[in-house]
Image (cartoon, rainbow, N blue to C red; front, side, top):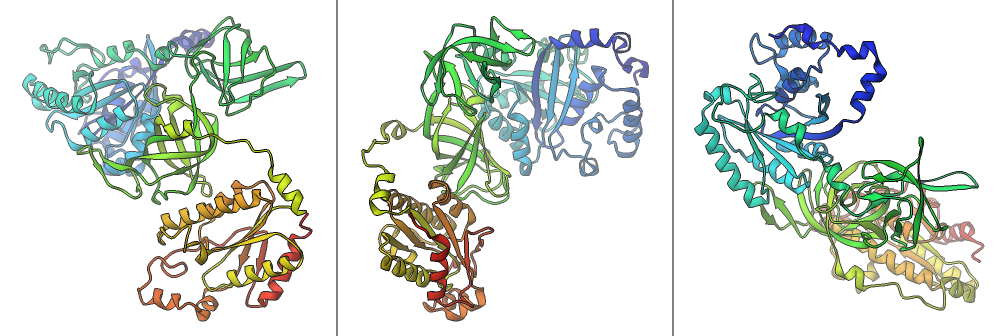
Length: 636
């Protein structure tokens, strides 16, 4: 075992902390991940890198020696994996579950390494770690060769746009440092890598436990003449350097306006270089201007490059805010509300096509709906499988539509402007990570046609304010009866109305839809679009639909101007609704003749804060209608 004194903190820290920080400030940073199959030695390799780069303090080393005796798998030797596997479950099972990030540094470069899980069930964790990596170290156990998870992680690494791949054939000490074993694995992996599009990679025979070819070339592998692992990590080109050669892009983080005389746009430059006087374009609006100054806390700069956080002031007063993109005027990115993307589903609850999710791309946040997947990708066989939805850890390709245009580039060209996440609107959980492939041509060919008569003109002629009265509740709750009574009373008051009833709509507009979750979502989306058009015509629209999911009711609310969507919860207990059973539907559902029936084998999510709540147990339909009208008047 090495002498502990060699692991004491750099003496310069104690002597002159400012000098120490200055020496490290200007080093480049490489982010990389280790991945591969279970027990290929990922955690051990990272532990060895930390150990050999002298990034372990004395108390950590003492704890490591103690833990190696209690939890280690290397007998009396230090178990380097314990430096990374910190969770109790990880130490107990000898596996990595969560992504573990570690920092270390050498004389030439700083590093952040992510140790990602090898188990298939933790694919989403691996994707998380790989999303910001410049390089991937794919480990292979020299005794086992290329395994299914090796192929799976290699495919994900390529899919996520990691340009630099190291094939680390580990545990060479356990095969006697046999060159033939290394060459066979290399040939096997090269054939697979070529088939998925990985054209170049660096192969290194190593032993994470013994330290062979980690920091220096080992005498045990005289037949290997390539670089040691740390030498390669120190010299490989980082993505930040490559990004500086691309066209200028800067997502606007916030508008900096400390006083009336200064208005700047702050953000981190995603790619390219910018100088005062350069022409820029605001995307998606298309407005143009020139850069006046590049401001920072330490003063104005003559030039700024990818990776720097700056505030740009422009020569003209242009409309620009958070979520917009400032780009090179002559080479702007795409802006569209429809695109095709590959994405990884990361939630326990399956994807619901047609449901509205928050889509976050850089500083942009929009509502997005996902169409049924074109196919799911089997990353083990690379086959394209038919799929109506995606479940946890599945990877698929689908078309996306957003509620307004967003600025983006294909992920293959710019990871920052092509990568996005989906967020569930109600749980705020990140449910997917996606990579944009291309803009849909129909998005470029379909444009809003301006009209002379506006929705305000329509409403003014009818002397009323448009509203959508959205009745929701269980089947048999009395939605249609009350909505019909409300329309009758409004008609007597000379109000211009139209009633959309759930059953009636399914005879025409939605006759092609069934009652699965996906079909129910599409049913409500279509009705919402129709209701919006009728509201644009100045009408008071009444809708009577079970609309069981909060997310879809919220989707319709977001289609309309604030205050025009009135959610009316017809609050009737299931037992009462089932006792009525005017259509005999509950009886069929109970006997198994009717599948996906709300309240029986399909859930109903009651409104949490409806504008109006009526109880049909205590009220007659006429009383409920009068109460509703009292709440929504005056309708001007």
